[in-house]
Length: 93
Image 1 (cartoon, helix red, strand yellow):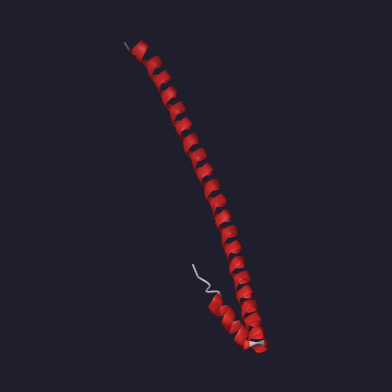
Image 2 (cartoon, rainbow, N blue to C red):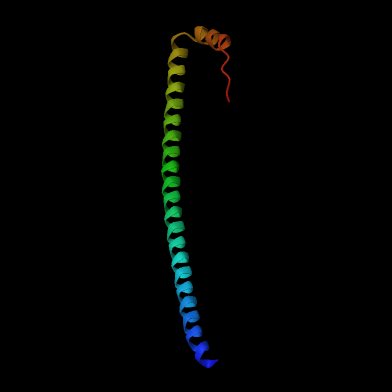
């Protein structure tokens, strides 16, 4: 009985050790993939935040330019501008 048990125990422990190594490698690999994905998502979020900041700055400049143009138009002919504003009723979203 002992003669059959020792080789079987040795083989079983080798298979078990190999399984532990495979599981550890899988977990390490999975952690690396998740870390890389998280870094990629963070870079994408940073790019989107930069784009949003640029869009907001451009919108601010456009609004300032529009205000300047309205002041110019008003100074030229306030009555015409008032009639244009009444004729065209802009809607805001």
